[in-house]
Image (cartoon, rainbow, N blue to C red; front, side, top):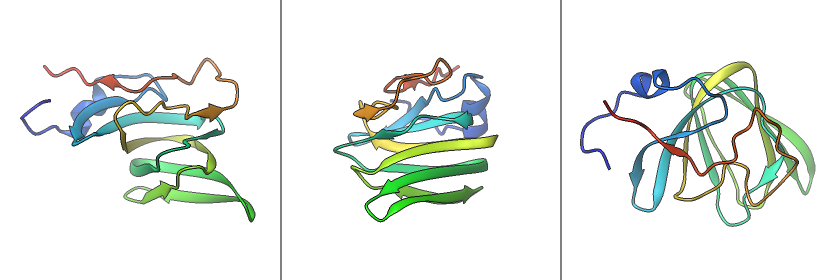
Amino acid sequence: MNTEPIALDRAFASFDALWSPRIVTSVNDYDVRVTKVEGAHIWHVHDDTDEFFLVVDGELHIDLREPAGERRVTLRQGSVFTVPRGVEHRPHAPEGARILLFEPTGTPTVGDRHDEIPDHVHATTGRLFKFD
């Protein structure tokens, strides 16, 4: 773990890949991940954990399939939202966004159950941010 402050702008500038989170630090058993997103992710479910989103820049939509039906939440810059465990969801950002995620270490980006994974989505548990 890094023991120095991390500038989020520096972390975001260190990679170009979309839907490919970088782990910038950890808190207890949780990773703090940053990622650039554009277009649609996939419908997926995290069976045993919630998923926290913070929009650092841009706008992110999250479609949810809940018992009462489908709905969409829109997160603008500075907004946070937590998808409860077991809820099928699909993040998407038509114009692109930079987001921060807070998830238990080892949580796959495509959840425990998911649609087919397209080429533009990296199935990963996060890649370590490379410090200079």
